[in-house]
Each structure stands twice: as C-alpha cells, then as structure tokens.
Image 1: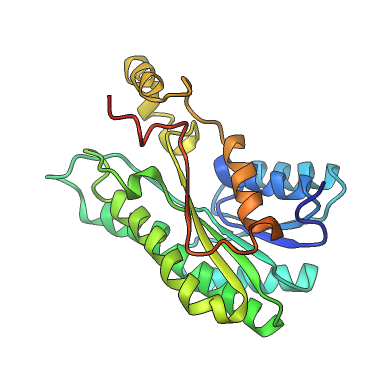
Image 2: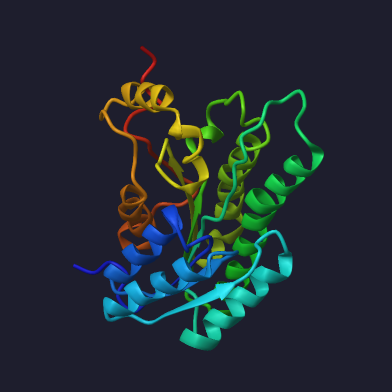
Length: 254
C-alpha cells in the first residue's frame, strides 16, 4: 500500500540524514519529491537518482534555508516541476556543539537562522502555495527530543527545536481552516552528520545506547515511516501533534 501515491513532497536538508531518508521513504510510497540542500552536491544528486530508480520523479534545488528567499524559490521550482505541493517536510538543521558561557554570537545567530527562521519561512512558503491550490496539505517539521529536555552543549540548539514544535502548534490553528495539517516529529539520538563527531566518543555512545529502552541509537530510516504517516491521509485527523521517535529515551528516568 502506497500512502503518498500521486503526491508531491518537498523535503529540506535532504542530501543526507533524516531528510534523505524521508525523501526516499516518500518516493517508496508513490510520491514525486523535491529536495532542498545547502552544500552536498554529490549526495543530493545520488538522492535524486535513488528516487528515480524507484520509478518516481525528483529534483534537487540548492539553497541555504537561512535566507528567506530560498523558501520561495524552492516552492516555485517544485511547482514548476510537478505542478503542486502536497507535503512539506521541514528538516534542515544544524547543531555545532559548544559550551554556554563562551558561546560565540555568530554560532547562536546561525543556528537560529537555519533551524528556526529557516523552518518558519519554508513552512510559510509551502502553506501559501497549498492555500492557493485549495485542496489542503500536510506539513511535517522535524523538531527534536531536545524540544523537551536540555543539553549542556546545546543551549543554542534546544530553543530552536522547541520553537519548531511550537510553530507546528500555532500553524495547525492558523491553517486548519484551509485543510492543512501541521505536526512535528521529535527524534531522539539519531546517527547522522549532525552528531557524528559528538558520538565518536565510544563511552558516550555506549551510554546513550544504554539510556535507550530499545537498546540502540536511531538510524535516519527510523524516521521515514513516522514522517510518511503524518504526511499521509492515514493521519487525516492529526494536527498540532508531536510524535516522539526516540526508542523510548524520553520516558526512561531510571
């Protein structure tokens, strides 16, 4: 059963990690896919090739989500290629780990611009197109378990992810009258480019695995199913919700 048959899905930050898994997962469920990426030309083109190998159409659009104009250009190119936008997966994000007391101003500002401002303008651009089309849509934003818990070296990152979660709650209200559903996914510790250096510490990685009731850290592919579900008509009455995908880490207090 293909849950996104005939849909057009847009995914930001999709050359690697969770975004790439979401893009390929959407294609496996019958969607044509437009991916946004910032730097990695090779991985972006290979993602497009994987989608095309599944029998679906795909385009890659380069652009920095920190620039509000990138959102408008991304949506416009997706519409030019596929004629419509049904789903926006706002995934692009960064997390340069750093201590709080000497946190550089430019690191804070860049993290906010990519993670929160980038999500805001991508969601807005997609919503504008969906309203124009008049047949609703689905927006899925990748927040984080960090929206709910703190991190010593993530004082600049956790507020952005809490903001993304809050953005989905507010846009669910603002866009419900247009038939547009807005939900967030909150990954736990997932093995991606964003944390590969941090988890290169074997002792820390083993500790994080022990903290997870399912006994392992997540893979990007673990997010594809939940994202596809929220994007699909199976979640037709789900909006303003947040889905933890963390192997049980959040509830493990022992």
